[in-house]
Image 1 (cartoon, rainbow, N blue to C red):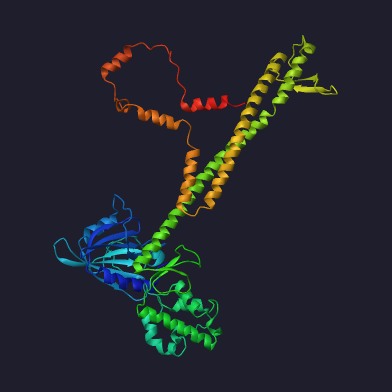
Image 2: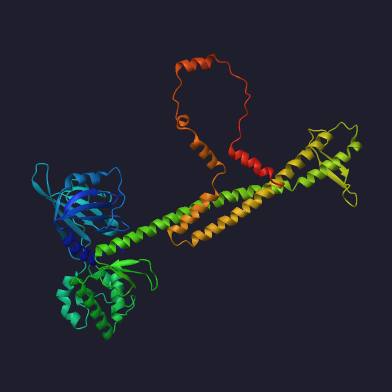
Length: 520
């Protein structure tokens, strides 16, 4: 789920307790929009992970470090220069907003203490990580936003920092302060309605409750047992009382910091992680309760990354199998065409035999006709058969041509039948792998399919060539370098010898001939 304002409130309280007083030891940028701060405090290490990825903005304490690039990007190098060794002295956050700032005390190039701000804007597709100076001038941002993208709020170096625009919603503390009496009387606070009683309940609360995500609004309506599409004007008095009680309970849990970070499944009986939240939800079946919100987020996003890797791995395997299927389909069509041509062998043989048997009838004929009519001895009625000829050849030459075509077509038919059996078997094998890929539920299943593909499509003889090359002495495999001038001169003065040594066939061609020699 996207990080909502309520969860961000709980997260900032948790990070304030854990991070204040820590020193920044190392800084990494594992991905284009990700940042990893390695912190040290009182003999223990922490890793603060910040991400401005538009699809999943987040911030939490991570358990294990991810891969880091060998060459750090420019933003990471600037952070290393300005923040390494700095101490986190505070965390600023406005209630219900998905933006917070880390206050970091560092020493400048003159050795004087100064303050930097690392701002994390976790606002969906507009997310960003920004480093500010003490007077809120932007040093740099992980995503540059110039006037062509947003002419009102540029996030570029040397520009003054402007905070993101606030949403016109009511915070939890404001609702409890101004609408507590109405909630206790079983009424929805009038300032939340703002005269919009014709809106359905879902959009009404999404437009007025600050920090509430779609999931949390659905949780509110689920607790009140009310449908999302119902309008406020359609509510009965007892239904409004139930809704006001559910809203009051939810707001009280937020204000009292009653955090119960947990992981949830999408439906009962499902064991895969679907979502997380800081508040206890009744809308989704709970999988487990975590020790902290960071632990819940770490486990959720780790499972999400595993799922994404599995999807990408499955997509790559499907693409590879599709390519193999296309190749086999092309082979199959070529061999079917060869078989159709090979089926003409009987006709070529008939033409050759009848023409050869009728040569005596055309004895002394010097012209070269394009076709002749001969008696078909294989026909019970003894009808005449019209045979097309090649005018560039005489009659004996046409006889030889027909028998040559017959032998060629017969050979093509025989080999095409052999290859078609192999192609159809390979097609069935490909379909079985496609079914296995479709039913794959974990990376091990996909790896088994890839191993099967790699084993079956391994070129014949390649293993033998590799083993022979590996057995050669090292000095024979090293590059001898350029020949000296004496060797060049000797090579020029030496007469070339006759080729007495035949080129040895490669293991691949040898196996190819051996394969066909065994065919019927």
